[in-house]
Image (cartoon, rainbow, N blue to C red; front, top):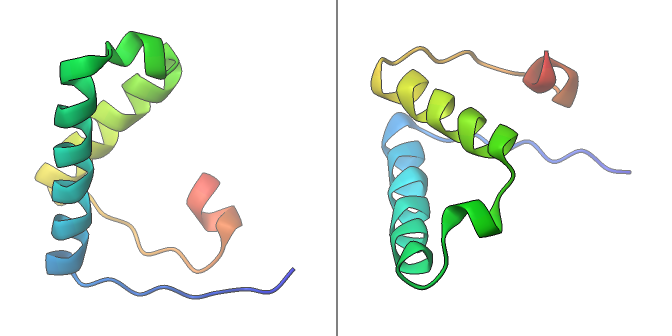
Length: 68
């Protein structure tokens, strides 16, 4: 499997999160998030959102860094 490195600026990351929120808002008007996602995923998403808002970000260099 090949490796792909993606580098995002804070502004680009904010746009990705904003796009996700737009999709989430649209889907939640039709389907309950509890029907789409497991509770563990929803908690992780909320934690990630809080990390982004508080700028608690960590640079990762590999998938292992990402999941640790």
